Image 1 (spheres, rainbow, N blue to C red):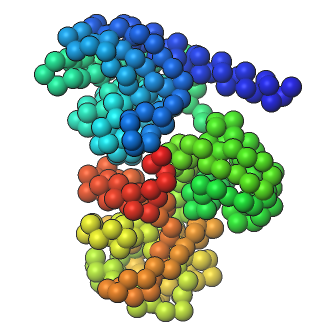
Image 2 (cartoon, rainbow, N blue to C red):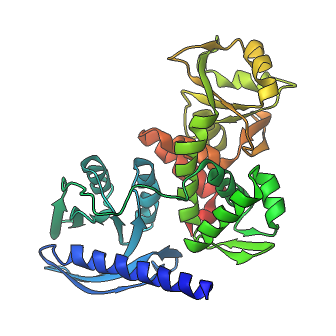
Length: 358
């Protein structure tokens, strides 16, 4: 009975979103909504699963079928992820609760259509059709800002599924041990992921069904909850931006991330900063060994090391080095609104997390 109730609630939520999307688009001059369907693959040979598909008739253009990506809270770092879909030439419309004027401009610059609950809209067929509405304010209509899946404990679990996925064959106790969270917390987090249709499965076999949403949950939980909690300080040292001197450190456990992690993995970026993840017992030793000095302008950011995955990376020009896992570096690169780090994040995702693009 409980399972049937959940299915019914998900169906109701889906219908509510479809009805509101139709309501917003039908107010757009020159746009006629012909139909809205639920999740399915769009885009021909390249697999991309949209949350919805809307069929519209645009004045002077004709009929178009457009994939709809639902984002409860749209953030600047999500734009390059959405741009990746557009890059593959999928017609894409982002539907969100509210899109601020700066984000509206950013989406327009990247050719990403959008609509929100406030009536802000962007639809463009170059040289044929253009509607751009921004600045409508968000009113308190009971949608709320809270998102229970965004949490520090959740971050550890999302990272685990990103590193081990898309198929995970472990039971609750094994996953909880890997993630460093309590069994009770894990039950709630996995329950939330199932409810949101991010993962499926029972007991000792799980599958990630919506990898792009899992990645979004990870980035938000990491940047908003986990990373600030682990932050120890900002430092400078005598080597400036020559971070390759870090490779000479021996007998101290730490993982390299941030911009320099992106440079090592992609060789596309020239890093201006580095993140170091250090175990508590090695913190003072590392600071003395590297001669780190606290500074508000420092380019070395140090974090405590609670369960962040580290892997050994081998490359001729670097030798053996220890990096935090690609999803951590990916999230670090999205934190700054900088085109060069966004581009590096896109390259890193295609090389090391390709399965999350499906």
